[in-house]
Image (cartoon, rainbow, N blue to C red):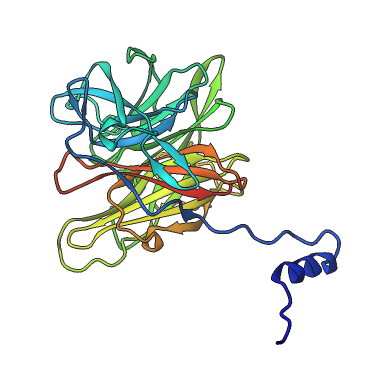
Length: 355
């Protein structure tokens, strides 16, 4: 019998022979943890509220999760506190619990309801205060842990909806993320502002990444950078279709992770994650319009496509980091908005992510 050389031995020889200072082998790409999504049942309720419409998510210091509801008719605007675990084996209820027991509590947002507020993004300050974006105005409000409004961040006039300018209907501040350290906040419109270009689905849609900087205890708007949403891909016929920037997540070192979501009636969702570098990008905060202007957009690199996830994603639009994993990666948790529709799902998904 011919003796086989051990793969471990070959790896050791290769490493020993590698030149000093050679780059480390590339880290594996993002991958789904576990066998697929955890579904929060459609009938889940807590504190008298139906659980659904989850559009943004963030992990609290105690290991629970806060998820903001976009809107549900004239019901009170609210945040749900959730409890589940994200490990190398995927997303699961806490030991001894069922998916119906994932919702722990509802936090009503004082004075706001589904008509006056369309919550989309959520970030958690080191103090425990919540920052939540609403896409209709658009706005970013600061809330106490119990849901009282503490203040509203100033929004540059260029985003304000008006005749021929500002955000398009239902395409305002969809994403929100606080950078490590808590002094930089990012948001963005979902698709191009009216004055920045036509809403042409066959061409990239220039949206503005808006940076807020904390100065003397307050977040103030600063630089703006152009992020180009990919053109709509795979459309056939005239049914409803849209693609937009659904979420942002700040990474250590200054890059961002962007979630682009596409829906085509009859074909379903396409969900892709891009790593975003601001290096060399133009600050367009002083420009009232981008139409016909020269600028350098941010650089984006596709890092994960849910076409290879092994399951059919629903309306994923919330994204947050979970705990560190034993191999040095982090759990990246995503949540879907079921729009309170019986045929849609509230999915909780975890990916392995190397920052």
